[in-house]
Length: 217
Image (cartoon, rainbow, N blue to C red; front, side, top):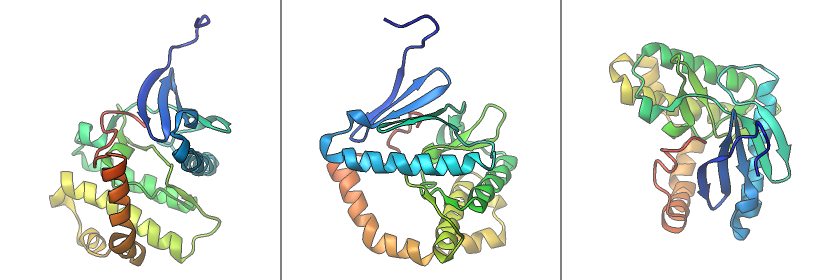
């Protein structure tokens, strides 16, 4: 029985790594329902997200979820109202300028998102502002060294790829140069890690490019 004022969970997603549910203004990522063989990875990704969100909470950046609670196998964070980029089809140049500022603040806090190629991780809020979700692959670094600069460059490239999809005529010459130059880390990933990743996610886990595109993560 639900207690008075207690809201019923709304399941957003269920997969190998557990469930994601919305309860009122909160989102709960629960690894207890993960497949036994994947639970260790689900917990590892949850800890990465927790670290990144805690670091970003210190900077008070708008457009980033806030941690509400963290238990051994459950992460609860704030819900951000908005539509994923591929549904909003945002073509306002102001959105991409704001998204660039948001990304710069992320990197200034030494947090690299590492999963910005997915349009589902970019939200468009009701007032047209950008927001970011799903920090499971995020890196939280102590200093901005060569690795942070390389991965930050690729974060930026992924944002510019989205801008190229929606506003190609507004790309600057500098942005086109950035798009043409993936980092060495990205080139190594494309040559070695990505084929393995695609085999696991598409052949074994049966994910697709927009897995969860209708959900909110």
